[in-house]
Length: 123
Image 1 (tube, rainbow, N blue to C red):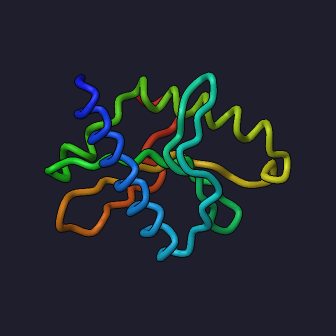
Image 2 (cartoon, rainbow, N blue to C red):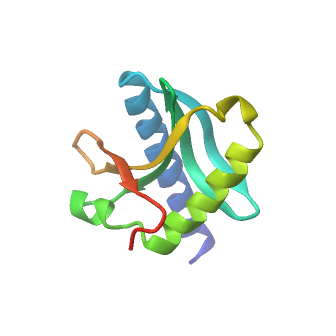
């Protein structure tokens, strides 16, 4: 990917994550982290609501179905490893439940928030 294309893709990703975080805030979530990078994987957004921590992957595509289908099992497994690292470093969340969500963004449409989009062991 050429440098200019990489920068545009990075900018689109940041914009999508900002939109997703705003959507979550409007739904009553508290954003705990954005763009978390660990040695084992990265997580777009980490948010909490009540006693649940959500590890959220954000996908923006021209079509909603493309965004909803853009996360592979391997992607989820990397996110899960990063979530394990994050939770291990934050004992104050030990009593919280946690899940993996997906937010799909499509131009001109409201975001789609899929709660509990994946669980370890799912194919």
